[in-house]
Amino acid sequence: MSGKTIKFKHIFSDHWEHFLSLGYPIRPAVISNVNKILMCGEPSMGHAIYFCEHCGKVKHVFFTCKSRFCTSCGSKYTQDRADSISSKLINCTHRHIVFTILQELRVFFQRDRKLLSVLFKASSDTILSWFASLNKSEDFKPGMVSTMHTFGRDLKWNPHIHMLVTEGASGNRTVWRKVSHIPFNMLRKRWQATLLHMLHEHLENEFYKLKTFLFKTYTDGFYVYAKSNMNSKSSDSIQYIIRYTGRPAMAQSRILDYDGEFVTFYYERHEDGQRVVEKITAIEFIKRLIIHIPDEHFKMIRYYGLYAKKHVNYSKLYLLQSHSKRLFRKRHSHWRARILLAFGVDPLACSCGHTMKLLEIFNPSKNSYIDNLRPHLYNSS
Image (cartoon, rainbow, N blue to C red; front, side, top):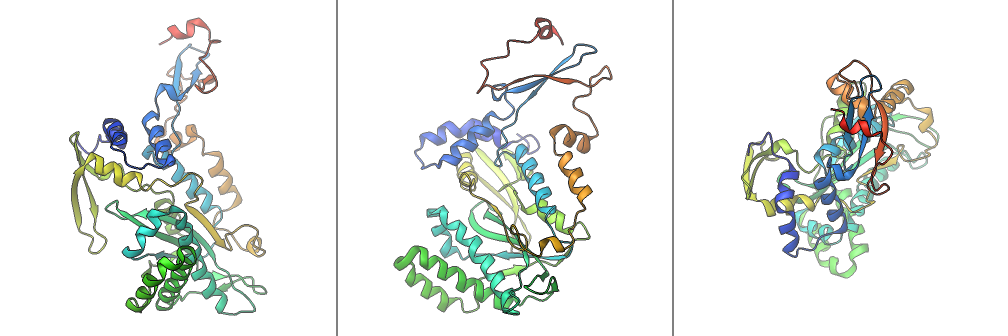
């Protein structure tokens, strides 16, 4: 099967039942999300029926699963998240900062996924504490949007934080102070100390020896790196948001081949940008994917500082998007508007030139079936 036609749904449909029989411990969120993608777009999910009053033509629009794990529905989730974040951004330059952890620490977060919240807390405290140190009486706060990724390019477990930080901050007396230089040598050590101390608080004595070892071994701190700053007046910040918020662990386009037993995919190695092709069993492929499904209600995107709720100076700053633009995006978030904007085709335009209207909705959880349709509709083409 060629890469152009391969979908995760095909692989899961072929191997999910066998995977379940192998006895691997599986989290409830995984069961829920996989079941959703297997049923996505199927008649049993429910559907809406649209009817053209002019010619009598009927169209069924099948419901989708709305799972972030689903590659089709996940793209809508990503766009919705991007729109939501974009509407909050201050009109200033932003810095993209990535907080990474050592391989020795990854197992703790895999063993207890509740610790993933520590990564959010430690990374935000690292930035907030440095900005506050610029002037203690002002207690400067930048705006921060943090997104967690649990995957590396090879799909293996590698939790890290992507953060969008304003190159400026608001203080107790000063509405805005531009801050264009962030000393990353200092941030690495601050990130290391903050994270290790927080993990020690949660893991207690079992973590003490490793904590001491890591401080002695990594005297320069943990790796924190930043990409070039982004001007909100350009599309850079928006493209960043679309790329990193709600991003799936892997795009389907990276699958080169699936023969029913093995999946061949590629990734670009982070160290040198070289393409690496990997061939693994479908079972291993499923194992690598499902580990990145977040637990139910776990927030993968979080706001801090100026972007947290109810900051006193937020309303005094200019936003990236005007009110009219935010309203436009909200109005065009409906599935029909999305298709029209993306492809220039109205999905409810009847071939006779009129617009179809909603006639009935079938929800399998609420209706046994639709029994109030006019009989002749079922005979319509």
